[in-house]
Image (cartoon, rainbow, N blue to C red; front, side):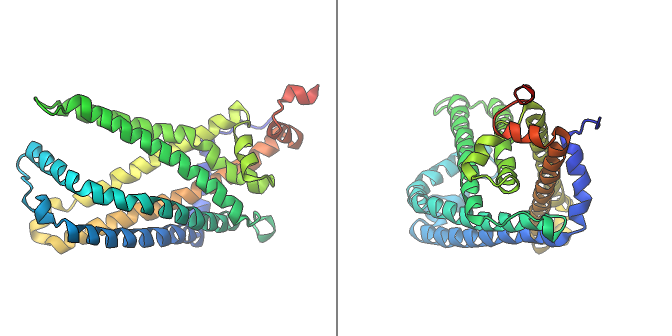
Length: 320
């Protein structure tokens, strides 16, 4: 009998494979940065328009009291009240347009990356960008709901720990902020695994996007447990990359007088680029690991049992 395989073993085995093929990571970086650069350019243009209506001086942002965090928070809250109507008017059209652009760009880019992940041209997955866009739209909806839940949780924390009158409970606010942020980060890892395996089901098993999503929920507890494990590990890796990028950014601060502001800005930019590229690399590792893990699952369970699970049957029903 084959030895049981942990979900993370597949990922570890594929890190070297992806590292030896930087062109695939470059494709992932390319489509993400195409969207990101265009999105940031649009945001920058809208920020300039808002600042032309409400300058920084009028909002009081040029006189922030950095020595008193509580006073600075009140000044920022006053500025937020001034900018909120203008920002909301932009978000009403920018978010739908950005979401549609993300679905199109990510559907095309992810389809190309998955196709290139095949070990040989004859074994490459089919190219189905329109169907991939549907799955990317589902991913975006779930991510949006998770972010909305986090935002509402932060509103509750602020309302209960920072009253309009009286002494604010900054320690309690910070504890809840960290606890709930990590909690929602973990929830995202726990609920997003069907969206991770659904593209492979759609391409490997030639399913429609909707059927792939439905069948991703019926793969059996042992296999889904390993998918959750992979997602949790990837979440931990992302947190580790954030911490590492923060360490790189803070390392030259004791020497800021000698280095100067330009050198610090270069270090911060390099740290940001490091995080983005490393995150994209691990996204490709995750995809390759899921692809190979699905093949192992099919080989271990057998063709008939695997197809039976996709049809909603268990092994006992098959034997019967």
